Image (cartoon, rainbow, N blue to C red):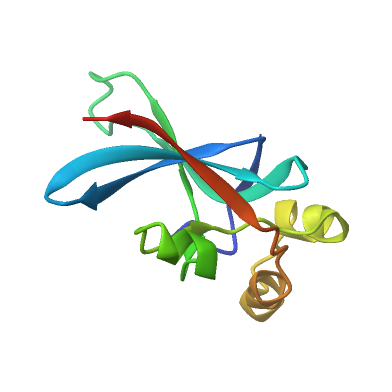
Length: 121
């Protein structure tokens, strides 16, 4: 796996999530109330086709956790992990120390996420 090995960071000012309201999909935009940038923990992977036919594939995924209360109240079931600036170096250089990585998650930032309807789908 990539956890504890291939870590990345995405800097975001806002993020979008799909929620269902009255049986209809809606897209909500979430932004920290203080308008601070979010340092979102992610994992990345580099796949190479063993036959050499297909091009290499680079991919990443943001890591999520249980939702912050205001995100749950808006109808979504998870929130991205927004790490603190003092943990960036350790996160990007994990050296396989999984307990240290989980401790970063436990000490994540908890801004209040304001939301607005981006669009009804």
